[in-house]
Image (cartoon, rainbow, N blue to C red; front, side):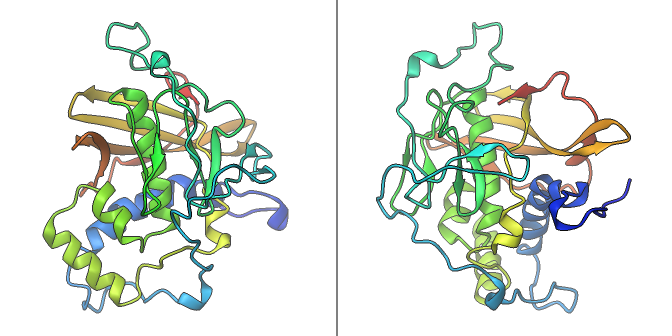
Length: 280
């Protein structure tokens, strides 16, 4: 399978569009593993060139509402909030699923298929539901307030992972929405201070952070959920393929947080069917 586009920039190559999952793997394994090491090592990646990054939007601006919607690389609607950090939607907890429901692990959150359900936040497409959160944007521009359900875990997984890809140098995001140790935070600060984690990725990267087609709850308990996201690739030899990534979410202080993985294998793979997955 080739990663190269045959028709230029108007075409979407599998290698590029899969970055919604593959870049996520780099963030989860690369950044989290990387900042846990001595960043002075000669094997460390080169410093990011800040001149190549887009200006950082003002997080938590307090603006509300939306401007004109746009479309993503696949021609799907994506709404543009006036607040670059996103616009939470009115919530109805009665739409949440419970453990006694037969589709407890397989139901989709309500509202993500409606207008404003997918919003472009700091360049990345992230989901907002009307049933399972997020319920608000805090003063640091973080989306918080996810339901203690499989659906809330899936929403948080997509939100946090895509935001980390778009803004790897956002310290509040890393410290507050990722389960990290003091040692990892110190290493992160060192890498960030050295210019190796840009505050905001440029559009040439974030434009590929499009909505994943589906999610899967691989395992769920009150304190942890294992969530998989599937990002669409092109049709190859008449068959659709997706890049899938596995994420670990933990329930901590009343909300879901992303738990870094130290595994370098089995966290991402290509799948050729979404049977057994939940479409947003």
